[in-house]
Amino acid sequence: TMTVALTPTLTSSLTPTPESIELERPNSNGEFSSPLAGALYCASRDIPQIPLRPRSKAAILGGWQNLATTDADQIRKWAGEFPGCNFGSVALRNCVMIFETDSVGPSRRFAPKKFTSMFAIQSSTTERGHRYYKNNGMASIAQADSLNGDFSLRANNAYCVSAGSVHESGVQYRLVMDSD
Image (cartoon, rainbow, N blue to C red):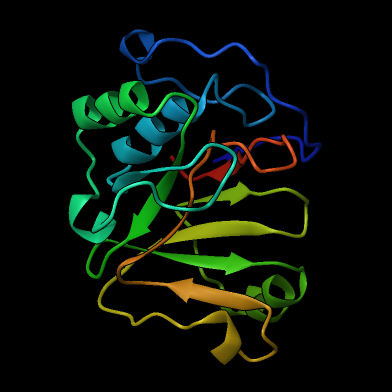
């Protein structure tokens, strides 16, 4: 299990070319050299990827649910077609589900349940994050339908921003726990 520091840092303005990005592990702070590097890492964990607008959560492509892929060549191609794009990790039934929280409350409430996450990504603050689990047929739960409106479960045709992508604040979505 990998654990890294929880101090957010701003990302570099230097972006490697898509062809030069190979599968890399995050640095000691859980950061990747680019959104593409983070997307390739997530794809290597069998989590389908889609391109998102730069520093955004918005999908670039219509019909993204049918285009999500773990194919590294396609992910690199998107990075070349959409320079500076972020990537999204797509939750699909019988693949992966993503537990997203915007506060520490849900983590504290569910911690006693002993859920074991594949890995976790921290978004803009230490209170926000995404935890990834194997999905064996669960359905999605919208944030508005959650107990206190403070979490969502993305389980089928939904996505969260991938590790390595850049939040609108300029802070990178970082890998903070990895069970590999």
